Amino acid sequence: MLTLTLYYATNRNHIGHRWSPEYYGQDFSTDRSNNLRFGRVTVEVSAHKVKYFQSRKVDNRIGDGEALACYIEEKLRKKHTIKAFQEPDSKVNPLNDQLASTTAFQELKKQMESKRDLVVFIHGFNVDWFQAAASAMALELMLNRHSQDNDDLKDTSVFLFSWPSNGDMMRNKAYLSDRSDAEESSLAVARGFLKLRDFLMTLRPEHGDLALKECGQQLHLLCHSMGNYVLQHALTALIELNNQKHLPQLFQHIFMCAPDVDDNIFELEQPMVNLHRLAKRVTVYYNNGDLAMYISDYTKGNVDRLGHNGAARPLQLHNKVHQVNCSNIVRGVTEHNYYLWATVNEDIRHSIDDLPYSDILRNRSHQAAQVWRLT
Image (cartoon, one colour):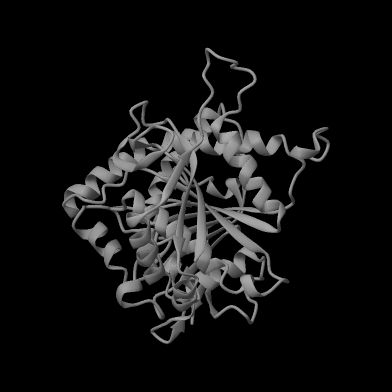
């Protein structure tokens, strides 16, 4: 058996005991929507089955991350352990107790010290707690499917931010509800980013405490579907929380996968015009055949989606922002969750490894300025 451990932050409501919940629900935390709980969840899975899904072919491409996520979800629903890190009691030793976020970041730092990058993952629409955790665990396993047997490649850990996406509602109502919840979750995400920034500030080499020394690995952000809408509003909240100062460059790479946001989102006067300041690189993955994007366009009255055809005016993109057209290779059941699948997942991993965009190892062709097509 293989024990999987996932660290998380969530503004969902806990079901059961506050610090050892059975799971998290579909509503906001009873404290408030911007309250974040930090913790870890563990589950046992079959190492053989993990290997099977990692090497399984889908459309003649190796790597079935979606099926792996479904398998992990099944195991999570049967048996798992959640430990929420307890916040200090302000009335008892308020100065001596460690914040829950600091506990989580310190444990993640230990992982990063063992040659691991960290990917912060924000899931999309219509996803319950078990599906969110399973997707994050599957993402980590898929990103590491080559590095686990190759000492020359670093491993990657995934940290989940889960917001109260409505996984059990009627689809149309769920979509509208989720957009509202995504927007309301933005402050929690922004606060989480600032907590992360504040923790990273303590890790500078000149800091006297050796336990707080920088680990030298990189941070990345991957948002899927409506998770990008969460990021959109978090960006606005982050600017306000940061007193209108320049955005901190927290991430090496931001991956926007099947982004359910407007296709003009990067243009002047639009909410993500300054997203590039948050990272050294931004990559947008889109698919012309993504049915979820089509539904969002035409049944919800939204502007054309970035995840369907890419940016409306690609020539106006900041030079940090690149786009990857997945339309030629993504089809069928993978058409929306392709960040977990074979070639797309490998391309994300290549970016984490700082492989040049035009490297021959990438299955890409140059389509236009800052636009690539996966082949």
